[in-house]
Amino acid sequence: MSTKKTAPAEQEVMAKSAPAPRVVEGVTLTRLPLKDNTPGHPVAMFKGQAPKSGECLEFTLENGVTYRGTVAEATEAAGEVMAEFAASLTPVLDAAS
Image (tube, rainbow, N blue to C red):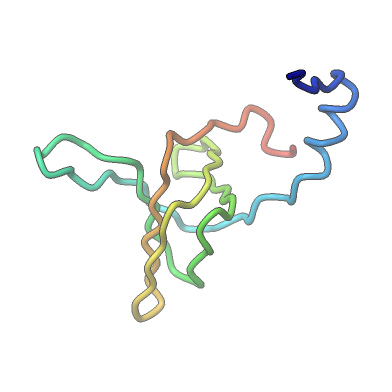
């Protein structure tokens, strides 16, 4: 059984064809505690429309650091959104990308 590998140029094209992240303003970041009271996955709180599971969000915190993450689950109530991420957030080194 062979595994198809992609060339670096092919990988770059595939990365560029990925949908752009949805930029969200006014995010505060927290972690919900797990059952044993240890911090869980990151959670973004903001006003607006809830993202869909699997959607990539990008936001800049008050300290000027920009992050991206893939939404695992989101809940919206009265315009307040709580978006939970399944994995760690990724800092964006160049916010223009």
